Image: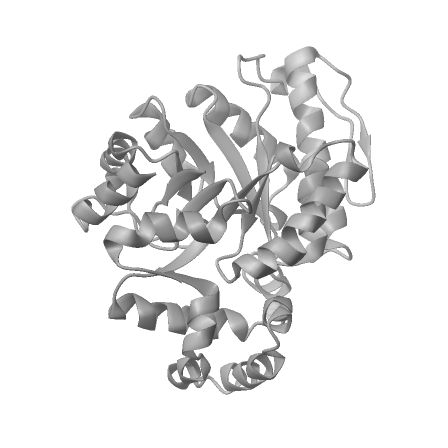
Length: 332
């Protein structure tokens, strides 16, 4: 089991080199960037230049906001720039954001379009590396045009791993079928992963002639080591649980009624009151709770046999809680 770190969403590009070097020095396995306040790919260029060992990936880049050709070319450059350390992590986002924030169409089939995006990117990579004829025909993409002027040179790191993110069974099964990894949503419980997500990954893998071991599962984990974090996690749970797309997680624990009430409060914009509906039992289900010195053991106990990577839902910021991060990394 590997311990990863997350770049804070407010991190400026000029802060990335120092942050990446600090993460590598502490011993984190991978440094992830998210598409929230900043572009997820640009920090990786800088992190790759200033590190040698740590893996670098997106968790996540919004796939439906981009063409597969653009993502294929960006990933190709980052794989070479990082010496083969880049992981392309993709998420679909939700319909409102794709339509109204990115101005892009929402597909009839989420898994169908993402499956085609992955296939098209790999078709480009085979064309660039092996001069394999570029030809893809699907429901969403018709790709068959290329020329030497637009073709990158072959490189030593053509096998770029793709991780996809999801909450429900369709994307979990697609990860087993076509990806090298699966990013769990932070709104999860070990029971939900063990009973629902991992079996679907295994089923998708089996159907594609692969095994569960071909897919690394990354737990983006809520943790509680003090009262401030408890309140933060309570607020995050209330926010995510109000989203109908994530209702299956609540349903697994029999808390559907709480989810519906939270949705009504969100529609009324009663954000401040929502966390009051999140009970201590729910916090315990969705977060690892421990003293800082015991957190590594608590995480291992919580996730062993379920996931291969753990990324705390806490941003890594050099100079803040250095003793906490050092202790956690040493115990991993």
